Length: 253
Image 1 (spheres, rainbow, N blue to C red):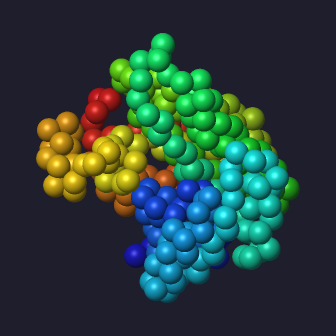
Image 2 (tube, rainbow, N blue to C red):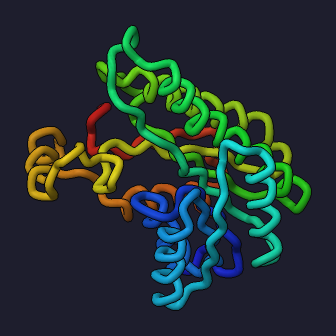
């Protein structure tokens, strides 16, 4: 096992479950101090317990990424806890119910934009402000293969929000590489995580559905998404700026 992030501090939003938890654990295994954030305290505590059980250092901070002061406080508490902010992974987001564009409730559309675009914008704003004042860093946004790469009937709100996030990522990369801050994105497809489970679907039913729907015959594991995130955050990707790395089992090939 390498230790690419020994002595580094990593912040993972939406780190309580699924992809975010997988990312947090992967960074901890490679030597990072990891702060996980989200709206609910209990899942964050569970992630930190898993980090510590594996011999890593972790901390949980409840925060709402759609509130600027909350994000500012999150960055401050991360730095207070571990002394720096070297890597930020903006994973927090949500999937709104499906409906044709003409039937999407306005509240659902605004919620998708608020969580998946404004929430990442506010995170970038405060994370980059700290990084550029302290020697630089790396940011990885978790987007989706739905959006800039692929569309799906009935998912207009989610698709629009993730397409905007992919564009925001690239513009932030252009704006801040001169500040020593690299910004990139990972765009997963279907992942074996709560967000990809249909209402009332059993694990067996989900496995069978993924076997039918995915070219690989299965959903991606959170660890596979984490591997892509760690690469983009590492010095191995020092010349990778504004990339949007799709990890979707060939769905958009």
